[in-house]
Length: 425
Image (cartoon, rainbow, N blue to C red; front, side, top):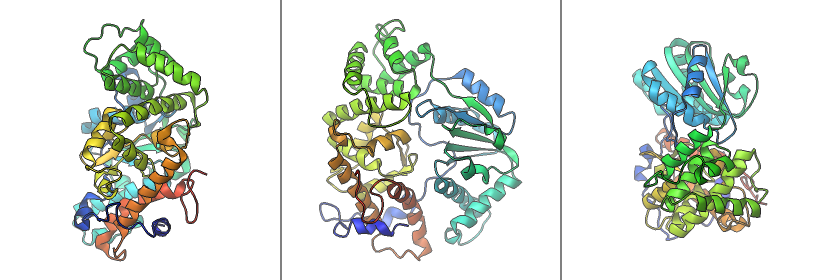
């Protein structure tokens, strides 16, 4: 699966300064992210009591399917529920279910933890299939648990994991179908009210005073034009904070100019998805003025995955041309711009922003075709460097290999993601 990576990097097995990072500390730091507990929040949130009440009601049965378009706040709502109610369950698993691979990889992580807890030996040499089956066995035999399957796109991919047991499931999905086939009650995640949207804008922008940010003023008009979707409003708030949280009328004017100049966004999708893509273009341009290395780093992260939980330890392999002074400052700058979220050991980028970074747009210099080609080449080179000289038959190396499979799968699935192909045709 990873063999094709080296074909793109025959002459690029060292970083741009000819120095390889020290591989001795990669093992534990590069291990696949844990599935227990929610990932770092990608957007700011405000309490959505009515939706939480509907979720609680759905969980009185077998489980709930949170259904809505990208940017509606499905994952954030699930995160809020887990953080407030985790104590009600004997244990909680959070699995990225955006692909069949990511789901079963997450189950394998949990299966190895169960094996370790049971005192089993040679756990790391256990195959992913064996470890995933161990996890499913725990679901079948356990009680009082909660499993969140985040980003489900295919009912068939999760059906086998949704075993009959005494626990609960939360599925987040954009697929509007009859989820009763999986004994789930659908909960529609719709836009915020205008009042909620202005509250979220204020929470993200952090103005010195709320004066001038009333619902009846420019703040209310701005959130209305953004559709009152949590992701778009949160991103607008981040932009306002970058500019010192001045009167939102300035951003409203910039937004209207941008919408008029680019009536059709290059990224396909529903209205909120196109809206936030335009806002991201504004944020990326603003971030480039403040910290170009943060934009270069984001462009590479767009080619890696999974969207949630990219290990921070992987960033050291990117080389001096991307992050000459290390990743900490550009990560903080990108987080301040609302373009990623951080935990102690992982970086979270919204799935839609991943798509934006892989979609060329010559009207946005940071997303020009040639720059995206360079970013992809850097992403491939870093993965190849992590693999160089390793004995893939050694079980001690397998945790490292597992951490690379997610990024490699994302690369392989994109245009230009295979042997002999070219990116962004």
